Amino acid sequence: MPASRLMVSEEADDIVALARELATQKLAPRVADDEKQAIFPRDIFALLGQAGLMSLPYPEQYGGGAQPAEIYLQVFEEIGAAWASVGVGISVHALSCFPLANYGSEEQKSRWLPEMLSGDTLGAYCLSEAHAGSDPAAMRTKATRTEGGYLINGAKAWTTHGGNADFYTVMARTADTGGRGISCFLVPADAEGLSAASPEQKMGLTGSPTATMNFDNVFVEEARRIGAEGQGLSIALAALESGRLGIAAVATGLAQGALDLAVTYAKSREAFGKAIIDHEGLGFVLADMAADVESARATYLSAARLKDVGRPFGKQAAIAKLVATDNAMKVTTNAVQVLGGAGYTKDFPAERFMREAKVMQIFEGTNQIQRLVISRDLARAS
Image 1 (tube, rainbow, N blue to C red):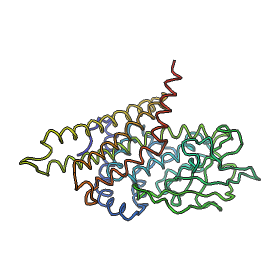
Image 2: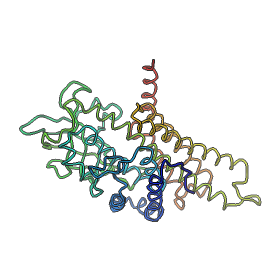
Image 3: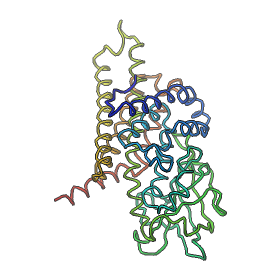
């Protein structure tokens, strides 16, 4: 059943309706087989790009959709409800474009952003390292000055689209001054010395390749440094604020998909002479699931509206990511319970939903980190 939405305009309603149509007609029929075989659906991203859904957050002058967060996040949700790997992918692509769009010079944006937003290319975001996931200021990947630019050496872990992206937004150390010594670079996929390790063997999101990216004397021209030297960490953290909203929306979509499955099953399955949804014990479980989905949606949309009017939203983004992903874990776990033995088999997508929900609590900052962000904001409040 489609989510009940109150859209701000007819155009917004049309955009979300288009996303729902593509999700229903093009994504849903393929998701089970592609996830089972760990197939990366690159053609699906091309389709979404042609429909204009890969560049919604960014300005029209560079080929974007110029849509506010309140609208484009609901597109992410619709995609995530049908195929979480794809929902995560479009969120990561938006994240990888964020530094250039918001911190690049006019010359840089004119040169690279139109292609990045064209729908023909796919981006990746290189921040985490094997020993520095939740603490990016401890990263060791270095960018050393050389004639005309920098040489990057090191490895970036957990890179979504690693080995499949067309460009990589990379944070690397340019000085040994902690968080103040990190800079941001836009690295093309065909850069000499850039390679991907074998994809991680994950418990979920198997249609979304995740790999360590290795940098072996990768030359990056100085024009590809985004922002000033030493500005990289602040750029990364700002990007993550928006990225957390993307993951919150996708997690909400995933939870909505699990709820829809559970309700459909509960209406069709009978026990003791009536549909199991009519048994109070199970009906209340479904009611709690619906409440979790609705509260997650309301939370991320509240943060999105702050973002859209230019107000600080970092705490609210962390809350949205925390609430939406924890709720997705609860909802998908309960979906398996509602289906009973059937939910524990691969005949139904409930078990896949549950596996996919787990990682939502981990990437874009673990939910323990979200609690740290929220508590520090509370401590600073006057």
